[in-house]
Image (tube, rainbow, N blue to C red; front, side):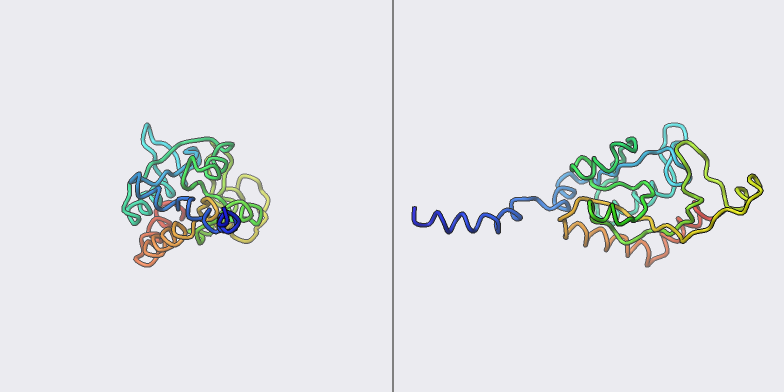
Length: 187
């Protein structure tokens, strides 16, 4: 019984060890669970029964770099971030803007894209290039700073963060990310 107070003092130090790191879960499953809405072209949408778009292809590349399979789970906006927070999904790849409010709830990858806010369309609405918006409204759209898009995941997973960053850096370094951007995001 003499060791009980010492053991109780050690419990806070041992609890992080009991929590499995997200990268271990991903590797054990052999898949990266990626949540998205699949209704916002060119980012992610369905052509028939097939998921496609900029973020779908990016998710496939990230999974390849992590040496796992990409498991895309189509969900709605109300479940997307809550599902990541609860561990239902590993990441959300749904053109999520890096905001201070979300930084309090999630850890994020470095930005994978900087897009004009005009490209972020409402649900089920086709995005329109800036020139088309001007022609339709007869007004000059308000321009703001580009929006940084990043990948949120559960806080407290430094090994996953490092693995995701390394994968994203390799995709950037060899030009695959730039090629995806040109294919899907350049008008």
